[in-house]
Length: 330
Image 1: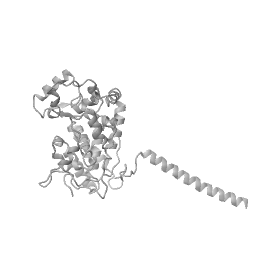
Image 2: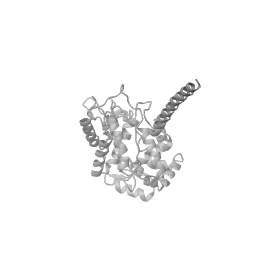
Image 3: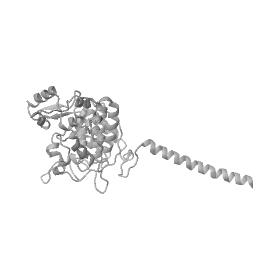
Image 4: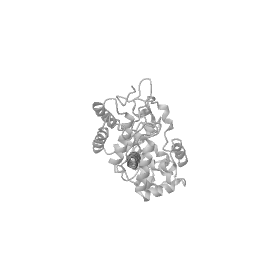
């Protein structure tokens, strides 16, 4: 009798221990994955079954495009930002205008966007491999991420599963931050989308890549600007002498993702008002100083802020679709 009780006890104990082990393994897997399935339906492994080679397809096409033209890294990151800040990260920036609708991409603030052909090439390849599965919104988010890494920035993963929006209207772009914004206006604009002042400064660090056109900063040259270094002002004058479309790099390494942008701000060499205000304002100066001193801190905060930006107002199945052509709504 006692032996039977002992065997039963051991059997129950084994079952309990096995279940505990399963629970521990599940918890470990969830913690290791960092972000599996969120409340918004996004998942790091969203395409694991439906389109398992999506990641290498995106990365290979982005890398080939940037090898041909390294300046496209800045363009893809900027396009992702301009997409997410208007109606959320839903690929609406990719839609072409029609005779009945002027789309976001044709607003004055978006006319200088480039890189649409890279997104088109990725979409065409993915439609061949797994038609109707991968959204244009996800393609743009992944392309921006891979552009950051190609240019020397941090590597990070993003959850996927965004659906493409069905709206793209020029009037919505009024919500984009202006290059003339001061720090308080930037903090308010980003705060309305859930970002802290530090996250706003980190995302502004994307200006470590790319250029600004004279039309977006010539207002600083009409009168003495105490936040602008006098020698750098002469450089900007020379740039603008060739016309409004002439380009000025944000820092000395326009195609390298580093922290030289923040060092430029410390020297009063910020190109846009919205750049230099980050150092001029006591609200954000300490953050700029920290990033200028510590590139690793900037990289870490930037990648965290980019992942967060990619979650703005994502569309689910009921509010979105998967376009066959990124330029046209189904």
